[in-house]
Length: 101
Image (cartoon, rainbow, N blue to C red; front, side, top):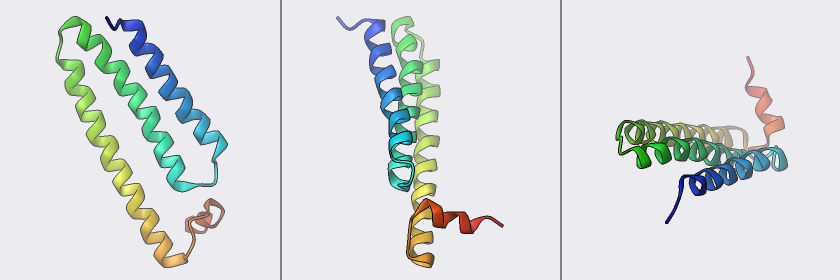
């Protein structure tokens, strides 16, 4: 049987992979977006696990809302990246600093 500790171990591993990806690939925009999604997934898993064991649906509903908001965030980030790539021809984070006002 899968216990609460198993959920925490998987959640911690998702979080650590996301944080490591942010530090190991600092100049790649899409890799950073994926790493942020991994961190959000770890947080959502921490919301769902206690709700699963306590038979409470409030945590699962909040996790669903968090996943939807996170998905919209990723879609918006990808749209900005595509727009920037079409306009400037690059996705380098050093060149994105040009967008500052």
